[in-house]
Image 1 (cartoon, each protein chain N blue to C red):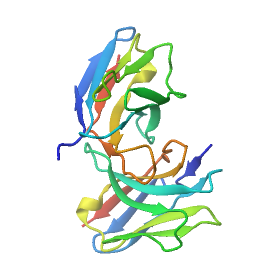
Image 2: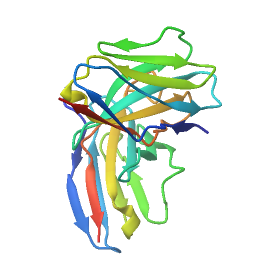
Image 3: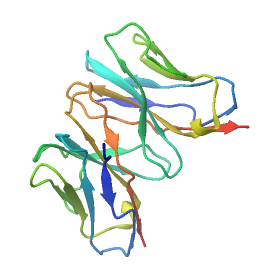
Length: 115
Length: 113
């Protein structure tokens, strides 16, 4: 079974530039998550999708971050414009459903550096 | 809202010995799950072990086991017969039925040969 795929793996941009990350979850997983993991901290949920609908985006800085999962499969996360404090690893995860009964499977992450 | 405290930023253990990582949490949910995730250096986060809060029996997965104290809201992870491959960041995370998964700050485990 293929795991969660993410690209790019690394990205360096200057502040005020835009960047987009892509995630392809495990086939059949209805729930998709984007996390931000700042160095030395645990992951923080940015947004959760159930199929193509948003379930939780309470911690997403909506003035600069956006995400979509148009066909209920893969997803993109965009930052525009980037700030220095956005430097982090962005993790995508998926699960069969949002219930705690089901494990979240994580991708390798995209390491973003904003200079 | 859920909160998680991992009071040990770093721990070390000798290979083949046992180590216990601590975690306390708070949740308003009556039905919830507790997870320990492992994040090796430059590698993907993977699930180590899961505990359903309604189960009194502590979960066990091979060399990994938990000590779940529901009343004290404590969920520690015990690693027996530690191996070099156990070196990683370990994150404790509770999840209520309608709540998001909330991660602690993590404990960095070093395994000394």
